[in-house]
Length: 285
View 1 (tube, rainbow, N blue to C red):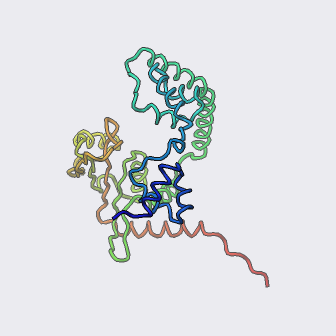
View 2: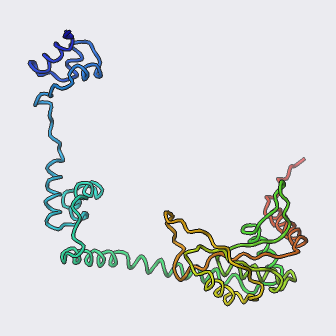
View 3: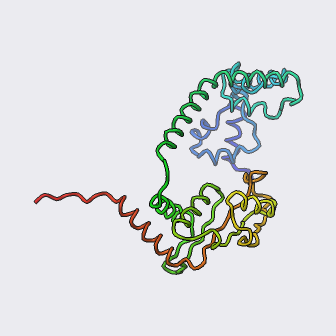
């Protein structure tokens, strides 16, 4: 059975060439209902409005075929680089093309010229601030080492929890400077380097034996106190940046019989925190 409403909607579309909005107004129906009734009926030609950017897109494709870069296309057509890229991303440039190589070289020269003065000023400012910071340090006395050691341990060392007491020192880090400072802290507390045990934690994709030797030489560790390395399984799907010759894993320093020292660190840290608390406001009578 033919739906009279559908017949009328189709007649209005085909014979009177009305838009969907006009059909909805004429028949008193919603847009979804109108589209359902008009399924399969092509819209009138007058409703097919040309895309204002079709001509620009075609020109972008032509420019790409001539070997122009995305930046050049965007600049010439006055569009965003992201828009130009979307138009021509299916037309990659030949990386071996001589013209492409010349463009890359020219782009590098322009970038270097634009930013060289900025980089020089930035590097000079960085060097000045580094020198300023270094000049403020001076020699470290025992008090300095105690404060610094307690602070870095509280950041990087294992700590007891109310639900799990573990009052002993275990410190892990990958920075030789931090580890050297922690060893100096232990020495200031009367603990020689022969007392702790040392263990490497490293990914299986690295050379654990070579990394262990590197740590022993770098920090002057007693080789007989170095335990078997913990090798972590490498996940292929994980993009890791800590690879190559500069990757030496993390060193774990474990101090046996260090319960009293752990308590001392708790006291040091508590006093440091107390010293940083704002002074109470004075209330006048």
